[in-house]
Image 1 (tube, rainbow, N blue to C red):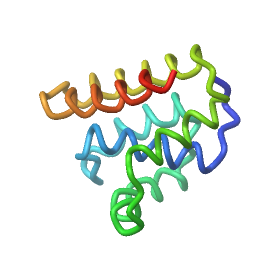
Image 2 (image 1 turned 60 degrees about the vertical axis):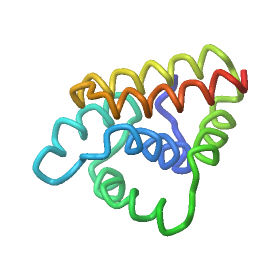
Image 3 (image 1 turned 90 degrees about the horizontal axis):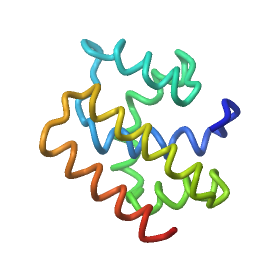
Amino acid sequence: MTNSYSQEFKRASIGLLLTIIQNVNPKNSSKYYKFFQKELDINPDEFEEILELQEFTQAHNITLENEIDTVREALNYKRHQIMKFLMILNRCIIIDGCDVHSYQQFEKIRDSFVAKL
């Protein structure tokens, strides 16, 4: 994956990641910032906006399927790129401690991506 991501791709990607981890807050945000910065080329200003993304997503009725479609489109529907993205999601679960709920969310997202390949 390249480091020239669009804002829409970043928003959708982070939306999916926040669906999985659901516990990013100011107290633990530094470990997630490092992950987002490395994997998705997120800068500090974007990260601050990301911390508010869950509320935005809920307020605007953005569904997982919308986010998945946005990511798939940004990755040009290429299997290899989508699989690399799923690996990023999987690493996110590991950072979060891999609880049952997080893994179930990951499986739901993964299955939706795979069903559309």
